Amino acid sequence: MTVYILSRLTIHDRAEYDKYENKFEEVFANFNGKLLSVDEEPLVLAGEWEATRSVLMEFPSKEDAFTWMQSDAYQRISKHRNAGSTLSSILVKSTATD
Image 1 (cartoon, rainbow, N blue to C red):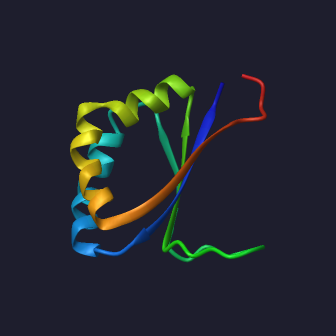
Image 2 (cartoon, rainbow, N blue to C red):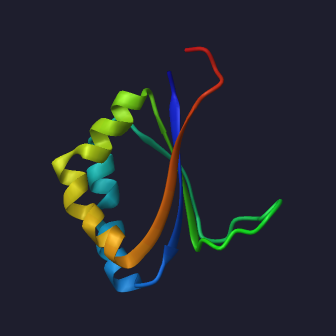
């Protein structure tokens, strides 16, 4: 079943976050994910949105998403994301029947 990861980030140290961003695509390309959106100026439709960046990714399955997230390659770069930003992230299932 297709799943999506939606992340909201507040970047507080751009130099540290850039270390993560500069390696992200190289690491991400080795997994079954698809980067659907990266936006630093989302249009807020309801409520409040304090984050400075939103990211939307698609994976064929929850297992694929976790394989990427737990990989050694991703863990090595995610330390820069953690040092340079505050993150909230969720995984949601697609409504499409695969």
